[in-house]
Structures are given as structure tokens and as C-alpha cells.
Image (cartoon, rainbow, N blue to C red; front, side):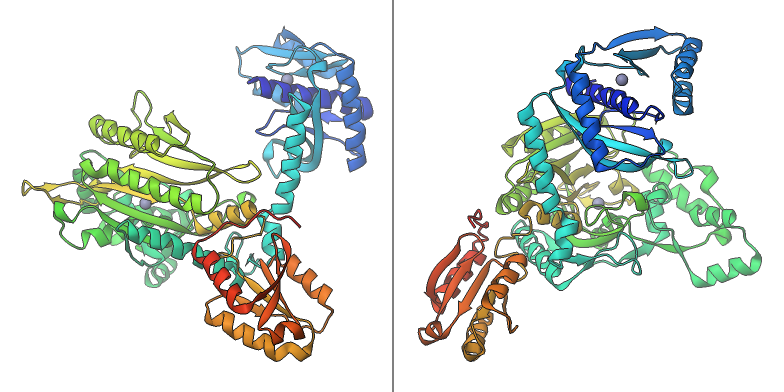
Length: 635
Ligand SMILES: [Zn+2]
Ligand SMILES: [Zn+2]
């Protein structure tokens, strides 16, 4: 364990000690450290409340002050059973003991009156616990299995210093306020409806504006880099994915195939079993297998998957990836080395089967639109193309005020056994990725063993304004799919060569990226992204005609402006605009109407005084065109 994990894990022992002091009947399960703290799962008839957390924390404080020593003791399996029984903890701890493989050491850690079955390691004395906090209680099934009893999980965190703890707690508070699920609802940005399906995002009008603006921005940058936009359907034939290898090898993370109606009816009449049907859907013909195996030069498709042609069942897959479709566009034309690189981009929607427990707002979903592109290039062009991908990411992230990010370069394992393709090409591609990452001027790490099996990759981890890290998308170099699909181009030597493919979806998906942006901006979007940029608030109905003139003028300037026609008081209208986080509110009264002006309230500065409408239009247009970031709010 790292020193921080040791500290947090020791805090979980101290929590268990406190639990047994206050609730001697409690049955303990496990209490490991986590990325951000620790937890302990306990079985207790009394339902724990927020007040209990306060009491438990006070008791933990006492135990820390008692400065108990953590002592390790190795015991035999029989002794371990005795210790567990003598402490009345057999309900879960005997099972946990049984998990320890025969021949491995069994140890207990003791602090004060408490002892726990534990491999360690721990801090030396409880007094080292100076900064900790219990955060919440949640239900958790024993061993994560829904058929087991639900236990109570107490979450907490600990840090080496009080300052670090305070900073973390502030970050947690901020994160709650910025939660994209909460803001998404309040600002009506997106909706998830059980009737449509879990994990499927409905983009409402306001959210759609943000997505559309982002897509336009990204597409414009891509065009500048010589990409071509394409469109492809949401499904593809199973044979396509059998060639690429996406099916059946990743079927667990895909929606099940769509079988053709005639085939399905035939199967039902013939009394085909489900298992047989699955086999026949996954199988391929002898010729298909021979072709793929000849291209890859090995038994990529094994004998067990081969069936006579007339037994095969055809069907479609909702696309889990856009690559095969783009490959078919590339392959539809002959290519000379002079045409390369070919860069095909699509905001392509894909479908993946995520467990319902894994789904989370916009950031973990079952249908999403990748900012996808596939580049087909010569081996010599890989470095330059990877660099192009990275510079695009830099431009977009900088524009969005996300200049704090790092890059991870996934390389193959030192022994390289589980990776496809020849080592020389790998060396070239890895060197290209490394060089590209270096030139970005941001921190990067090399992670051996983290490559995709078909080539090295680069991924992006961004830090948002409150210091949380988010993993976005990747750039991957691929030597395998060009072989599987028998892609080629004619080289300067007049001979056919294999192109290299680069897959890149640097922002992951529009869903995830927008979810992250909602939290990053806390709903206060820059003007160019704000769904409603300006709200007009007339003081009374007498100036409604003037308000309509201003509305038309701003609409003509392509600004997203609305007119508040409610009859309530001015204060209420302004308050509502604040809740809706509208960047600019223009208050219109009789005096303003006479001078063709408006009284400006900005989200950042509050009251900014009276300005002519013409000057405001210019100001807003410039702010949109320059994609200015929102100023820090002073009100
Ligand atoms: Zn322990
Ligand atoms: Zn791809």
C-alpha cells in the first residue's frame, strides 16, 4: 500500500473499532482504502443515520487521541478461526478467511481492543490520523452480489494534513453543486426517460444548442486539418463485424444482434433452440474463415466457428464502433500514395451494452455519439498524423479553458507477446506517439502494457476547474484492421502496400464531453455555448413594443435572445434569469426606449449600467465570435 492508502486503510480499522464500541452487535465485513478515501461494510440491525456518523467520528477522534499501536501478528488458519469466533465475527470474516489461498500468510492487525483479519499494511500509531471525515452511508450487497444480504457501507476519507482534507471537502461541495445530472435537470439540458430506455440520452432544445455549437466548432477545426465529413448508418451486417473481430468477441458489451425476419420465422418453425441459434449467428462459412485466415496469416477464425453456408443466420448489429463503416468508404475507391492520408470524420453514434448499475447521467450511457475519425496513411505519415490529432485536442481544450490536462501514452508490454503485428512497426508507432506527446508541452506518462492489442494509443486526462480528473477519448494506431479488411494503396514503386489506420475520438463522446463541460462550467457556459444568451426584461407592458424591436434586432444578429413576457415584478424576473444562468439580462424601461438603449446586467459583474442596443449587439457578437471564456462571477 502507498502511504496514503495505509493512512486511509488504518482509518477504516479505527472506524470499525468505533463501530464496535457504539454498536457491539455489529458484524464486520471488509474495509479497504479507495481512490478518494475508505469504507467499511457492516451488518447492523440498527439503520445508521447522519447523527450516528457524527458520534462515530467523535469516537474515532478519541481512538486517535488514545494513540493505539497497530501490531501485526501472523497466525495459522486454525488460530484465525478461533480469533474470529472469540470476537463473534464469524458471519463474514470466516468467508473472508476462506478467500485466502492455502499456503499464503494469514495475519491480524490489532489496535487497542480491536483486531481485524488483514494483510496490511498499516500506520504505526493511531495518533497519525489527524485529518479524517466520515462522509456518507450507502447500501452495499455483500460481495457485490444482489442475492446476498445488503450491508451498510460507511464512507469516509483521510488525508495527511487538515489543509488537504479541507481542500478535498470544498471540492466535494463544489462537485455536488456542479453535478451534471442536477444541473442538467435544472437548466433543462437533457432528459433520460425510462420509456425510451436507461442510458439513452434525450437532448432537449437547450442541450442540443450546446452540442450543436461544439460539433460545429470541432468540425470546423477538422476541416482546417483536411478531414472529410462522412455519414454512415446506425447498423451494419454481422459479417462486417465478424471481419473486424468486434463480433462475437465483444458481444458482452454490445446490444444483441438483430436477426432478419425470414430467418427468425424459419428458426421458430423448425424449433431451433436458443443455444443453437446463438451458434449459428456467430458462425462463419469455410470460405469466410479461409479469407480472413489467409490475410492475417494465422488461424484468426478457428474451426469451431465454421458451419455449412445454409446453416448460417445473417443479421445486423447496432454499431458498437464506426471503424468498419469508414473502412468500407476508404475501400470503395482505389488509392495511390498521393491521396494519402485520407481522413474520414463523423459524429458517429454507437451503442454499447453497459450494466444498468454502471450507468451514470451523460457520462456512462448505452448510446453515444463519438467525435470519431479514421485516418488512413502510409507508415511514414503516422507521426505527423498523430501530432495533428493532438494539436486539434489542444486547440479545443484551450478554447474551453481546460488547459490543465495530461496525456498517457499506452505502449506494449516489454515482452510484447499479447500484441498483434510486427515489432519494427510497433517501435516506429510508439516512437511516433512518444514524440507527438512530447511536442504538446503538457505532462505525459508512458504506460507499458496499456496499448490496445493492435497498436499504441494516447489518451487524455483533463483536470476541471475544481481539480477533478476526467478521462476523455483516445488516439490509437492500428496495424490490424487494414490487414483484416485487406486495405491497400499503390505506392511510388507501383506495388500495393498496406495503409496504417489511426482511430481517434479525442473527446470520447458528445454525451460524456457535454456532461464534463456542464460540471466544468457549473452551468455558466461561455456566451457562444449558452443556450439562451440574452433575456429581455421589460419593466411594464408599456414598453413591450420596444422590447419586440430589440428582440428582432438581436435575432437578426444571430443572437439567442428571449423576451420575458410574464406579468410578475421586475425583481422576480431578474431572479428567474439568475436561476436560469442567462449570461446577459437587458432591462427595458421608458427611458431606455426613448434612447434606443437598455440597462445591462451581466452574470459576471451584475449591474453594468445603460448602453445603446447597437453597442450591445456588437459586444455580444464579438464575445461569441472570439469564443471568450466567461469572466469569474463577482456577484
Ligand atoms: Zn487492515
Ligand atoms: Zn475506430
